[in-house]
Image 1 (cartoon, rainbow, N blue to C red):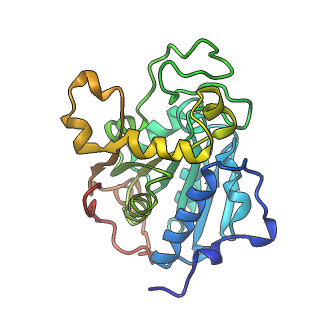
Image 2: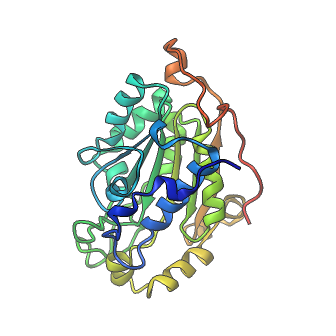
Length: 283
């Protein structure tokens, strides 16, 4: 136990938030601040960097240092911040479009450099802030404001991309599987080098409504039944894998990060040692 609670990281005077009723961004923010409290990281030792879009507003509601970059550039700014202040814990909260579209190149190079930054990608399958357009992570055949007959693009697997690029830690969960999500966030925050946690989140205003997924409770139930453990997903026949998403820890390495390879002195943070493992099974 630590002396911190998630309440210490929330700027209560800025509430209520502007997210739509039933949106998953609030769940992600509470899970993240709860884990920061469990680890015992002081707010003044944390930088929360965000981008543009619904997920980008997360920084409005925290007491730690915060920075909002232009669309897609969050990881580039965060890289500079980490180099200038290596003792800070730098966390990037981005949306699916922010991280994978205009920001895709920055994601590749942050992972390739193995920069000591934790990226939390809130994937609600569309551009929720600007009208529900499809993104690189929108599932195939989905209805959006810019694909009224269904998307024809093959969706990107941002977790596999980060893994192939060189990230030390990669995991995926959902806003339904909160206990698992908090475990992955804890492991990512305690990992030295680049870490990425993709969080599948519900957008009832656009994606859910366009694709007739029901109200927020029904969308949460969809995550429960359609996002299955990674090992279970791997055991499915190839023709059935496309009907489900996987969740779990995809990569857990302890390769030297950019700061270590550069010979920069990095103070040990309250997050503890960098080498952690994916604990427990996905139920």
